Amino acid sequence: MRHFGLIGRQLSHSFSQSLFNDRFDGAGLLYSLIELEGIDEIHSAVMHHKLEGFNVTIPYKVDILPYLDDLDDTAHSIGAVNTVSVKRNGDAMLLTGHNTDAPAFAETLRLLLQPWHRKALVLGTGGAARAVAYALKSLGIDYLFVSRNPHSALQIDYETAYLCAADRTVIVNATPVGIFPGCSATPWTRCELLGPRHLCYDLVYNPSPTRFLAEAAEHGATVTDGLAMLRLQAQKSWHIWGLE
Image (cartoon, rainbow, N blue to C red):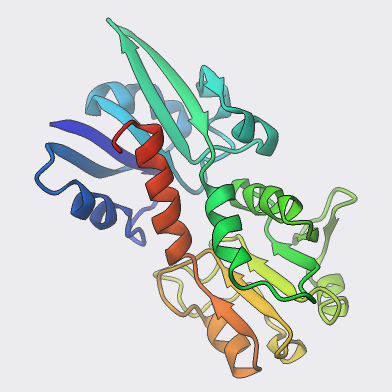
């Protein structure tokens, strides 16, 4: 049985296991959810589970970088990893980091874009937000990160974000706020500022819709969750692992 998995801290929200195992059914492949208290456990986890490849989720997409042997060009440019390939030579392991979040996000977002979607707000500054920013840049969309504690020229706080929401008509939630089981939370508390010209994309897919998307839709915005992105980045992971 060849073993793959998802590395994260709390994974009760994830659909990845069922998504992969449905695809793997009858192929001698297994996909597991592997929760780690700290990313320093990664090498022992890979060895213990005999992983041939794995995905990485919150909060380890950036923290894992020092534990990898190599990065592909996209992951290096983004500074975050969500897919790792494992090559073994005897007892030695070579871990290579990849980022399938960015191309999966870009491909799913492109289908929804209108001519007025030229400026974006990216809620969050972690690994997922970095992948979103990379994708937006590839699509020619200007972006600003929105953070509770901004500390760079590309970051603004939420009050400033609310002031420029009329002009920045693409809003992407790249934080875990609103994810199961914290479904009553929202990263964006001023949905009255949104309207029919807005496109709101929440990387969270459980629940669907999130409170953010439900309230944005009530004000006429186009909304989408992260499930299509999850499926597409999974396909790209399969390709990296040599499974198709």
